[in-house]
Amino acid sequence: MAPKNIVILGGSYGGLSTAHYLLKHALPVLPAQDPYQVIVVSTSSQAMCRQACPRAMISDDMFPQDKLFVNIPELFTQYPKDQFRFVHGAATRLDHVTRRITITLNARSNPTAETEVIEYHAIVIATGASTPSPLLGLNQDEVFLHEQWTEFRKALPTAKRIVIAGGGPAGIETAGELGEYLNGRSGWFSSKRAHPNVSITVVSSASQILPALRPAVAKKAEKFLADVGVTVLKNTRVKGVSPSDAGTRNITAKATVILDNGRVLDADIYIPAIGTTPNTGFLDPSLLSDDRRVKTNNTFRVEDAGLRIYAIGDVASNVQHPAVHVILNSIPVLCANLKRDLRLAAGVDPASVGEDRVFEEDTRTNQMVPIGQSKGVGEAMGFQLPSVLVWLVKGRDYWLWTTGMLWSGRQWVKEK
Image (cartoon, rainbow, N blue to C red; front, side, top):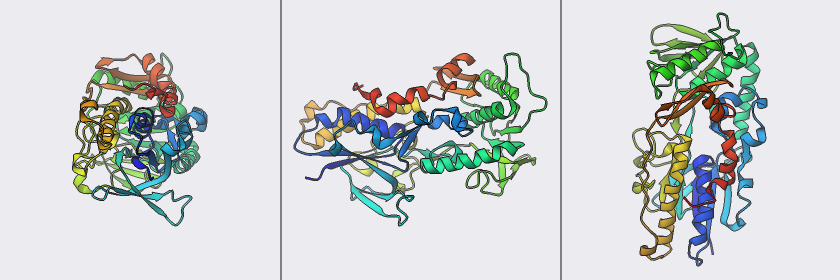
């Protein structure tokens, strides 16, 4: 008998956590008359701690590579073979009427662009979002990311002018890491470097960098940046870049950066760190909100797409700030509702499956921003954090100390 497929699109925090949770807590309680299989589809065969990119892109020596990158299929050998399958490829079309998903298999091992069509019983969309700079995320696969880092590292020793667009966490963390690496670490009594080895400029359209944080914290961050030779331009927007593919398709192109105040910056390396784009191009536009995220209710169901279709993470519209901690808080809610729906579909008495769980996002400010390997700023639940605490929790290794529990599924041993 063919199994009923529970397809999970995406191999990062939301997708892998959902797969572990279902294999541990949903499949074992489903009626035995039907076999089920969890299928994870990912463009990368490896998962990684994306938050570490601002430091990891500088050198492989920054982190132990066997912890930074982990093989996805190996994480699931702990489960029965007939209950799990990994598909290395990209979702290219979801037909929510016929309930089929088309996957273009990994192009590197499949030059003919072979496709596979999977009928799904349930599907979770956890495809995340792409960054404008390929240095800062798994926009394709791990091979592509390593290629981009290699090119960047070749250009770094001769770069004298670096421009970073974006005053959010990604831009500020990247500036801090590069500033410390190229211009030297700031000390306890250091002040702004008068003549840094490399000119690093952050361009932010907001009135302060790190706009989610209170102004005093943002000013502290600006001081830490100045200590490692980084200049910040606020209330300024990048109007254009020449060549147009600088920093995106051509990460090492020398660029002319044109600002909206008429000023022109020359850059040996240009890094755009402004926003992300949801990976939802394979979905029918009727399922998407104006910002291209999936229209999702507070149970994580995509009601417009039919039964047993869900979205989580950067692609879900019901979450205001899809940070990792918010995604992880979402997992028990999504999986409880998915488990409930699977049991109802299997004919279990509705009186015994419980009620829906509803997700309520904690909208208090929770943000930590390392600036180099010794400093950082942040707030947690509205309270300002000392620099040493930001270093202790995040700045030492950009959360790498947490991913072992997560990738292995040990974080989800108990049903929450």
